Image 1: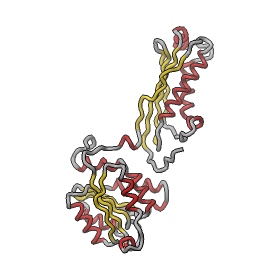
Image 2 (image 1 turned 180 degrees about the vertical axis):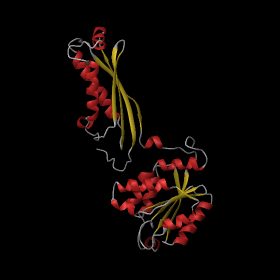
Image 3 (image 1 turned 120 degrees about the vertical axis):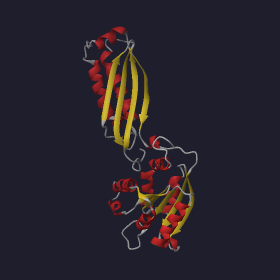
Length: 305
């Protein structure tokens, strides 16, 4: 199975369809609900809904998904029985297999019920019509890459006593994004120095995004949030709330982070934890949705990039 634990829950949707071709007499019996085995439309619908909920039992690499809604619709057409299935779930992976399984099960149950009436049955056109949800739906495109600075805040790393891992993981996470990391520096845990560097980068007009890592905890030298609040024009709390919520699903220590986020001019400044695991999980939580901030900062609203 694919490891989906780094993913965030989002609203997922899928719609699939298929057809059972049969003779005119069979279709009329289905329409009139006169098939000897019972009501094909109701039984096949129930079978499709049940199958959607049991998809992981038969499709080997599917994850068991908590489905929020399944609907299966059967319509008698001129030369076939049409089946459409729709599925929704707020979860980490898509529901297209659940929709396809629902259609397939409904068609097979309909086949089983009408086979005594018709020897020329065929199932055709089982296909995925639409799917939505997941990170790809929230990915923005840009004519020019977002210009980013990564600042590692650590006394020991600045003194050369420890190698940086968190900053490198942040840079690695950005490689697949429309982001250019043009600045990478290590600073000591000094409020004045951090604030000066944030101000310098933001006011240069050359940096759109500043990501700091380190100095966000409860230690006596942890002052990155204070330095950030010294320089921002306005706070953007939802970003760090999202990071903490994501982290709290993975470790109770996430609640100890004091990370802050805000704007200085048109530059977005975000504090991330100093641990390599915390930094990596924070980037998993933020991307790609974070980048939608920049069309908004530039006055483009939600629909422009």
